[in-house]
Length: 115
Image 1 (cartoon, rainbow, N blue to C red):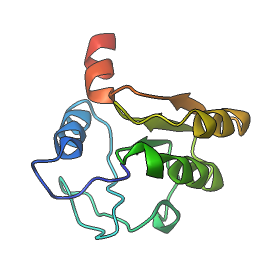
Image 2: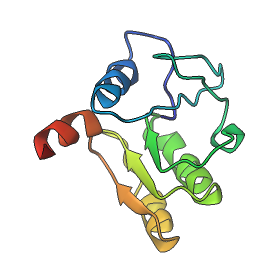
Image 3: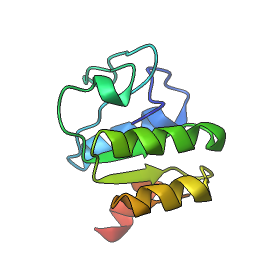
Image 4: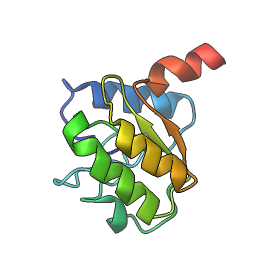
């Protein structure tokens, strides 16, 4: 989760908690590289020493494009832009690179809805 920190007042903190309850492993990616919900943080996607399946993007739209490009560079399988995170060009680049792409949706809302 790019943008996830230990700040309990941020939406990313609560969404990460929900994802864990549904059995998803979260990996905090934030310049502070903090441990969040018991998971070690990393300062960037390319610092993560294992394969990442989905890059959940919790940064503003102006920063989302470079994150999608980093997701392509680390061979992630999918990119998920959170609610109100919109970058059509980044969406198109990620899809052209073969990644699954979701934009302007929240997995904490979608996963429970899908069962």
